[in-house]
Image (tube, rainbow, N blue to C red):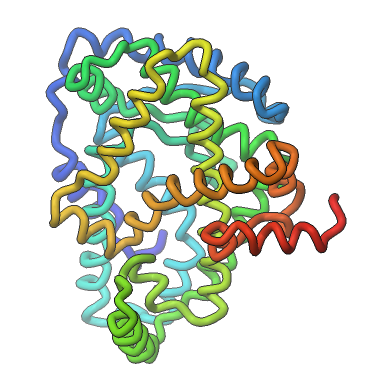
Length: 354
């Protein structure tokens, strides 16, 4: 196991920040797991009927967790995903006197991010699992029960409607990765390429200073895409644009699908969406800086940018034109194309449909 990141310390920090939502001890909590088992199955049927995609992985499995449980699942997922990078960093940096300090700092940074996220996340499809030895931990749809209960009570949401609405979004992501045959492999390949290109190169910091100055001169936020993008090489930034474009498409498609697939069963969907969009933007100043530092603010923008892209494409050619984005990896929009749909449209007009 690599020591580049102190994973145990990251978990302790995250669990400490996560705290215990009072609703985790509520009598309402006992019924939520059974609800999500049923509603996840219903959501899969609705999503597959709406998209025309059939999951090759069989029935979706729901797992309700509390905040510490969500933290532990994500620490384990990060360990598996980042192993190629952390192993290489350990080889290059070695076991010098500062190595334990650097490992602790990295653990604290990751723990702070996961701890804060655990207080806000409602559901998550975890497909970034590469551990063939433990299939029981793969292909799971997670729901953070206390956070969901808190939202229901705070905004007087109808529980069954709200839970189905959340399940629709997460099951849509599962259907994207298990119903579009090439998508999961392509995404993991992109992530592997990105991590494989990371090198502990101090000279990157000097290039980053120039990018910060240029952004400030042009009135842009230099941290809008996170610190990683700021320190990335030109080739890495190209891959980041591919990843960003894909995630914006998937998040926007997830939001659109959850509303359309459940239109007949979730009368309150519009209100749920309005509250969640407000919640995404209504973040205190220290937390907003954390979002910017790790690129979470960019992720939150993916929902809105993806929805705008989908609206623009469907206005011009309906769902049939949008489906071309899912034909192959070549057809996926990049992040600049998400922001300017006409560029993607022009590329598609000049390409032969798959």
